[in-house]
Image 1: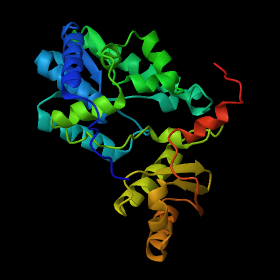
Image 2 (image 1 turned 45 degrees about the horizontal axis):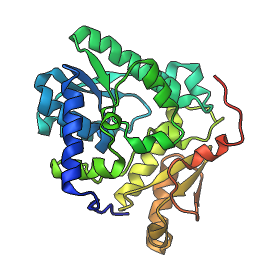
Image 3 (image 1 turned 120 degrees about the vertical axis):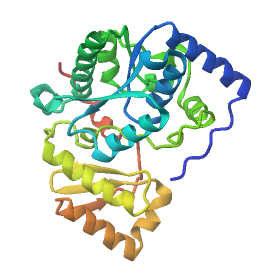
Image 4 (image 1 turned 60 degrees about the horizontal axis):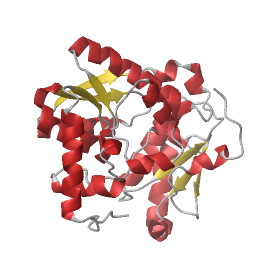
Length: 285
């Protein structure tokens, strides 16, 4: 699925919101940006670097829940833009509350990340931590937002009233090559709630998805059901996947990743589809 340039936003309105973003970040004085390499945090870091220079630090987490190629891409972009960039290891996989994988998994993951960033901010003398949350994120189920609030993390995109379309347009105008990059949530998000998270399962997911992207599927999710991989693709990509030569290659790549069964979800790609299970399930802390 090719993402098209979001052109509906008037440039004068974008300029106004960009100015608001610059002002929000400039007022911080110094900031660590929780930088994943996605378009949202990349835009925040690009603007932070523009207004704060070396007082803006991009920090990327390294853990089993992050695909290796995502970390590599984030590092390359930071280097190409001259950003001050630090990679830190996080240990959410050692937290049993995270591993149990109930509806609060993301809360414990983000709490671990922000605790590590707070430590680093103290070491570097940085005043604030910021993330890439935009206004569209407020309408989804995101326990990580609670973790951000607990850690007093700033969300400059929200402060500037910037939504996802506006993020992509501003990133494109800034020359960020990730302006049209598909969202890439953590690998644990592919594991159904109630199924424990493990390093092996996330490694299987990462390997299978990397193989499918190598076949030209830009947007892909491999949902992890034990020995079965349920593949979600945009509806327009399903016919290509089902073609004899591609299906054979795709299944071989997924089986080589450690699965024994491959199922294509005919409903197509649905962001956050596993969250459906939470609608009728009680939440625990």
